[in-house]
Structures are given as C-alpha cells and as structure tokens.
Length: 437
Image 1 (cartoon, rainbow, N blue to C red):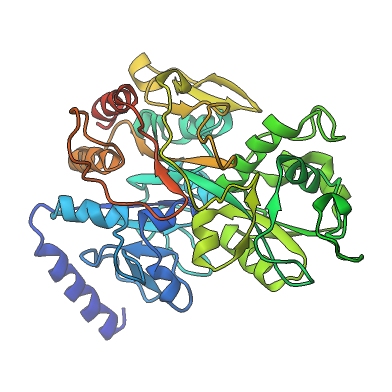
Image 2 (image 1 turned 90 degrees about the vertical axis):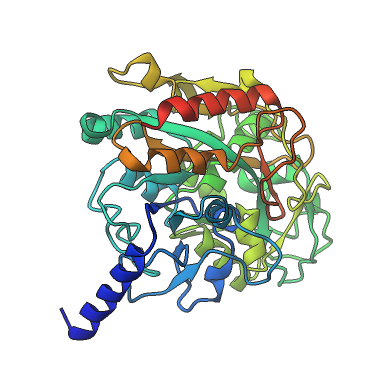
C-alpha cells in the first residue's frame, strides 16, 4: 500500500474509534428516494457522487467522490441526517445504484457485494465494510424471482427478507421544452396512455392540443436497468389504459423493466433511447429536443428538468396518503403481474415480515402516478446493529401515541410519508419490532 494511503487509512480508523458504541449502517439501492433519504448535496460533486454518507463515517477510505448528507440550500434535513441527530452514536451511508442492483447485492446474487466500491461511474458495491449490506432502498418491491434468489443464496445465513414501506413519491413525466414545445404541458390520462402505447408518436398530433407543425417526433427515453419509477408508471398504465383509448386489453403490464411493461408498444415509438439509469434518462431528455421520459419527482427537480402536469395536478404537490390496513399485504410478493405468497420454507413469523402496499391501493386522490419506496433488511444476523436498524425504519413513522408532536423532518416536494392512520402505524411498528433480529 502506498505510504500516503496507509497514513490516511490510519487517520480514518483513529477518527472512527473515537465514537463510543457507534453503529454505522451501510445501505444502497433506489435512486428515486435519494432526495428524501440523503439530500441533494451529491449534485455539487464532480463527478457526481453515488455515495452519500454521514461525515462521521470515515471507513472505508475512498479516493472517489463522496457527498455528505444534506442539501445544497440549507433549510431542509434529509431523513438519514435526522437519524444521526436523534441517535448521535449512529450514522448512515447510502449508495445510489438503482433498485435492481441493490436487490442483487442484498440477495448475494451476481459478481457484486456491498463491500465493493460505490464509485461514480462504475459501482461494484456500496462501499460498506462487509459483503452484506445492512439495508437497501427499493422502489420496485420484491417479486417471486427476487425472493427465490435470496433463498438460494442467503436463507441459511440471514433467514428471511424484511420489507417495510416508508415513503410515497410522485413520478413525473419529464420532457425537453425545445423543438417548439411550451413549458408547463398538461397531459391527461388519455394522452399519457396514447404516448406510452405508441398511439401518439409526434408532438404535432392534434390530440395533444399543442398546435405544432410536423414533423416533431417523440423520442421515448427510459432506464434500461429497470427502475422504481418505471414500476409505478407501468402500474398506472396497466390500471388506466389497458383496453381503452384504442389500446389492446393487455398492452401494459406492471414491471420495473420498461421493455416488459410496454410490450410491443416499444416498436411503435418514433424513436426510443435506453439509458443506464433514471438520472441518465433525465439528463438525456434535457439534452434531446422532443424527448420524453419519466422519473421520480426528486430526480426531475434536482436536475431542473421540465415536467408535465397530469390531469392538471402538479407532481411536486403530494398530500399524505391515508392507506387502509387492508391495503398492506402481509407475506406477499409480486408474481408476473399478480400477487402470491412469499416462497420457500419459512416460518409464519419470517414470511409475515414482507409488507407490500397493494398495487391497486389508492395512494393519491390528486396527482395520479405515485410510487412507493421500501426499505429491506435481513430477518436474522443483524447482531448489535439490530436496535439501530429498527430505529432507522421508525424514522418514517409518526409516534403511535395520540396527538403527539410529529418529530419527523419535512420531506422535499413530491414526497409524502405513508402513515396517515394509527392502525397502519401500529402494524408496521409491530413488524419492525419482531422482524429485525
């Protein structure tokens, strides 16, 4: 090891040893909720950092860009930074890789592990201290195939998967306002269906009502690796478009994989542009005249992208949902567009640690395209990190007592906490207490 690297590592270890009984939680995964989890300070780094961590976490020492938790503009505290404020001995590190990569790491699947580098341009892990993460962020909830992969690789070591819904986030339709397109477009359910169904292929189509002369082809940009925003959008398309607006009855299928979600509509687009992730898709739209895509509102706002209203509702304004306990499915996973039991030989206690918001649950009464973000952790093997993990999951829940002061931080525009009623809070608190061991 070069001498300067050895010195830096020794200094980092010395600093870390000064925090008595410290617990550092290492996670990664979903991009979309990053603005709420870690803030937007990563945007001020060059190259733009994937890794955001509390300033008290100094190991492993890395030579690439790392952002502190926080926002460029003061005034709003990210949830993971507030966790440190509430529990000063504990801290969080989070690597933005996308939900699919995060689940592969969590499941011990493929060539990557949590102790790989969370480098800006070529992540191989979360820059954690061990091969297993403490948690992942996930906005495309566990499927039967995901859970089977966990059982094959890690059931003997970690028992079962814990899944807790934590946030709602609006998914925006982003577009480039060049090529004669005005700012502030307003789509309807019908025009969203027709555009993603390949029925409207040009911005001059009179059904869009823009009074533009042709040709102005629409380039549909999408994350090729799958995304939680794509999962939410495809759920909207499946529930609102199939069999309507001149589209086949099975045109759309809910999936984080856009190609799977839209089926043969992809062949009808005037142009399509796959990108490696949600951030890259938004950046491509901003630079491409006539382009259109979708993204969590946090990513759209962070990049200053133009986005449309839908049915006259702004995605940056999202009220707190009031989810009925009946819409919190227990022990269930997704299975090719349907819902099934969590697989494998699991005890009831283990299986019931999977909590899934029903895909048909009414989350928003206004802006219609809304996704749910989850945190996943392991049922067993958390050792001395278990209390800190429970506290991290509780950061998203209002206290159960009647009418207390809500200690949670304010969320960025377009995000909302999910716990609109006491029964919902009680269910999730019970799961957190029994499932993190």
